[in-house]
Length: 526
Image 1 (cartoon, one colour):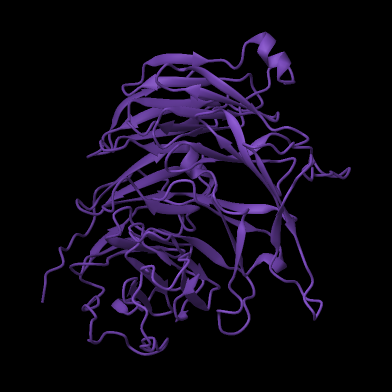
Image 2: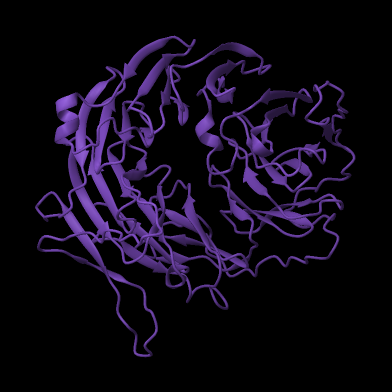
């Protein structure tokens, strides 16, 4: 294990999708650092009127731009080249937006308004905005379920609801005008998603209804209507009559779709043939065998009696996962609430509502349970590595786990914990964040921050293995929170010269029809 030097951070920070840079949002600027050198790559000065709490700080899909959103403003800055600065100012009737994100490209931003009144799509290249009324899902936790961008072609599929009826619309990748719309045969659809190849649009019904997953062609024609396991199979699975779909997850290679319901069973559909390929069952008692490893967390007290990083012990006999006991005030929940494929689509990690501290790893080609990871705390994050297959990052809930990151792969001796507290100056308290860093080195790396300090961690086993960063002793570039950062520094690009030289998009009141009266100024190089 190798650790970089500690660098100044904030509650809003993170690596770029391509893994080459990471950004930290400070009160008056965005500091962009280069992963290779850990030095400041660029400082972007923020507008002086950027007030209020930050609601969104996110990289664009291409890693070329970065977005900052507050209550009444959204700003998009170029990171690598040029001095592009796009601004959207929201009227009082629209603020506060419930969710803001980039669209299919870094030239498009999406703004979901409160109460699902509308979805606003802003094209930063043309300075045009398109409003779509009544998106069905509009909160940060659910907005992604109601819209999906088609790979390569960038068509938008959107789920809306009006007068108690679901509607699906397909929008042009250029103008975002409606190319086709229809009422699906659903009572309360809970999500839609394009397959990775863009060939099929998958829509699933609410768990309160009969099980149903619909497959549409790219032009909106129904091709397959899957209505759950056969009646006798449903009884064998112990499903209540007509148990509905909780969630659908599509594999990165587009070959399989996992359909989860309120039971401990999973149905795996073969997408090319659109037939049921296999069924997987989370057993109430797990028996170790040659092809199945069971790892149980074991906490030990240090000599001072304080909490020490846990270790995992391999079970040699049957183990019963810790199932949740509900009190009389809690609404009973059951079934799989999380399913994620690794990048190779060969492994599937799942978590049940009934046992939130247990992670199940399935081998899809063999239809076998590969590993069971049992923690003492609820697992709150599962993240497969974006490039390296079969490498899983996990986080747990609880104050004792704030400084811990767990990593598992099939060849490791159970999950191993990375304790950040000895490496981070001061106390690692409050909210922390850890995510994979997309790197080209053989050993994987992690970005970790505790709101005040950030650091990179390499999983390299020896000093000879190359690191994503150059291991030097140069002191970190000093950042002054209050100083005017509109300056030239060694190795820094010029920051934004003048906030007025920008694309300015002022949306009208959402109750009136949108007109195309936008100011547009193309930023010129000085």
